[in-house]
Amino acid sequence: MRFKLDENFGIRTSHLFVEAGHDVETVRQEQLEGANDELIFQRCCGEERCLVTLDLDFANVLHFPPQISSGIVVIRVPRNPSLPLLEELISRFLIALEHATIGKSLWIVETGRIRIHQSQS
Figure (cartoon, rainbow, N blue to C red):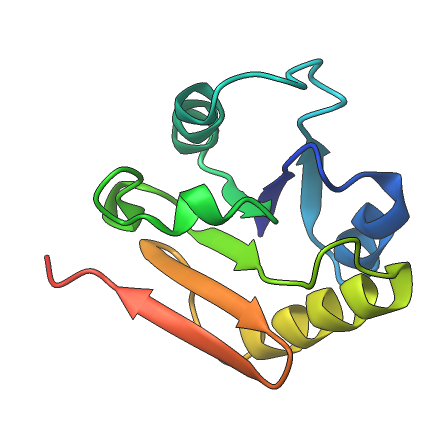
């Protein structure tokens, strides 16, 4: 699968996606740090990449409709999460992805659960 990691990720976690066999780009690699959310979302849609982010704004399905995307993953962590916690949540997401399709949906990954919002259209 093709992913784009938002600026709050980087090489610290991108290796988990690569090791699982996925194609990964980061906002930092594309020098899009500080770009507005709409531009990031449009870029992901245009490149057919699933966005992975810590930014809760992307959980707003009215503003960022998952049905026009290759998927949105919001990782919910406490403020200033440890790297091991972040890696654990990403690993749980990647395992869940083996059994489900993320395209056109929003996944919210939290400690203890993954919530999936799928469009009705």
